[in-house]
Length: 267
Image (cartoon, rainbow, N blue to C red):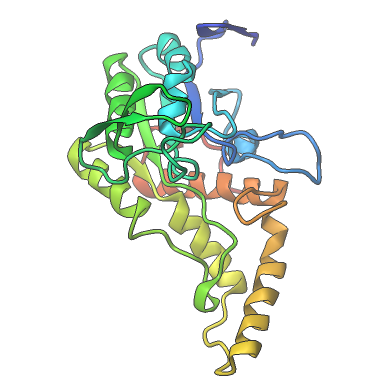
């Protein structure tokens, strides 16, 4: 199989179904140094049978739903889609950033369709939409082309309040589910599948009543869990990327997803 990239389209020369992965650095990072930072889609071949399906990692580090669309990255995926393809949509880590600063990545929080005209710090104006609006646009675009969208919740961070891994179910988790309810899109809750795995390995049922000891216990948990992270609390190590890929596969199987039939058989 030969994959050719031109500015406006991905072209493949085989007849296999294709999976396009979209998102930020947690999906695609440098993906080359053994001890560096890795996006989980770089490890998708560890769970998929690549003799049956073609994997295309179209994600880009540092992007939000807003910038992925604004920079034309989404258009390239859209122009490439054919009936029978699959597209994973996973954003959130950068959508929480400021709306008007130099990077202009932030979006309006929430799933409800809303917009506002903002004056950016560089003096220009931009119409910015809600997190849910951008997700729904992507979902609609994929369906328009006869392909299958799959919404994926954001990866968990190496933060352990109270001795258990941080869960962002009251914000992004809530908004994902509201979009799912409205659109009926297939949903893989990678956030909680991976968090369950990490909690099982590292969580502490009860921290010390002594504040300083409790703080030290949390620091120890973060250090141990750091095997699955690299550089900071967000980005994954290669092991962490493989864990998230396994979480994706687990979610597909649990859903009885059409995409699950292209996974490698469990040994």
